[in-house]
Image (cartoon, rainbow, N blue to C red):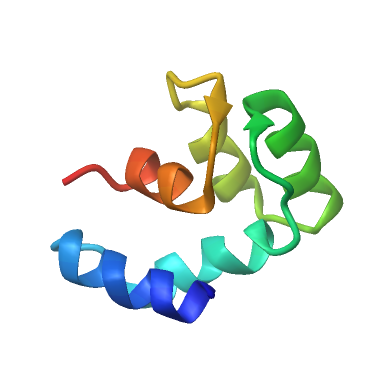
Length: 78
């Protein structure tokens, strides 16, 4: 699923390194959506996400996500 998501987003997010997307994808594995930002941050930290990934998600203005695609779209807006 995440390979397809990376492929889709890489084409839609110019200037975003596909390795960066993959780095985020590995931490979003097994997330049950919908999810609050706080629960997502807890999941990221429990799964060994880097401080940079956690800080990036923490900086988002959204408080709720319905899908991984929504997380990526918010992290890497067009």
